[in-house]
Length: 342
Image 1 (cartoon, helix red, strand yellow):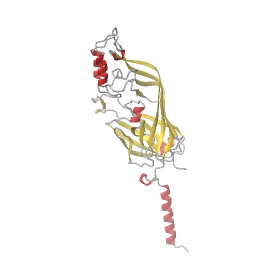
Image 2 (cartoon, helix red, strand yellow; image 1 turned 30 degrees about the vertical axis):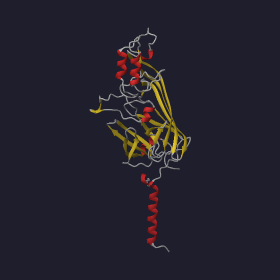
Image 3 (cartoon, rainbow, N blue to C red; image 1 turned 45 degrees about the horizontal axis):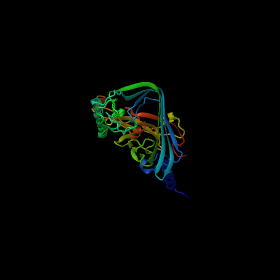
């Protein structure tokens, strides 16, 4: 016959066991459940807000109306801890398209040399870069850097006019003007990314892009520090809340809890709140920032504080995004089972 003490111990033990089963696991005690990253897994994100694009050839595009964008990643392959993702980013709508164009005047003179000298040392996405001055890429394929080769190329033709048989129209770049037109614009980029599943370190054509935004750590708790992006500088935030109501508002099957990572930095400038599924770590709401251009003299201010440069994500730069504010994308569809394991 069981004693009352034995019965009490049994009840206490069962209570503790049940409590353990239903208490959300602490991040340090859980094996990261990335089994959902398998060939064929995909997620699609959409947005219809303001977007500015900046191309390596100097063209700038500002979408105005009738605009929408889509970002979709698909797992192509997984070998151990490494996955290959196919990433497609598409934006289409009515836009103001700005592009620098040269207005050849039939002579190579000091104006042509001055235009190259002004952009000397600048690479694409740097303030002051000019695709017109990047003349060494014959056939309209600039090498994305204005250097001594460009100056030499123009200097060798100095003094020539269109009547001279040695005249080279490629270096007749001045004067120049920025032209714009309002028209429908389609932008599409496709990248194949190699990602370490656990660290999220990402490579495109062998070039490191830092940590990506497609997923972060699952089971994150309030106060945890999350490195959302890095390279060249880290964008770090802290988990501010576990939000059950936001998960209910999403109406995603299986999602019961999301966690929000608040990023608030002035230099580099970053101000946004990314959200992730608490169980899988998959991004419910991602943000991308683009590279420069921005005047390096600190002419931009935020609440009176000068900001010397944009925060940016290398992935955003590869997609040609060049916005000041973080570009938000919301999850639209996925075949991944989100929420707690069934």
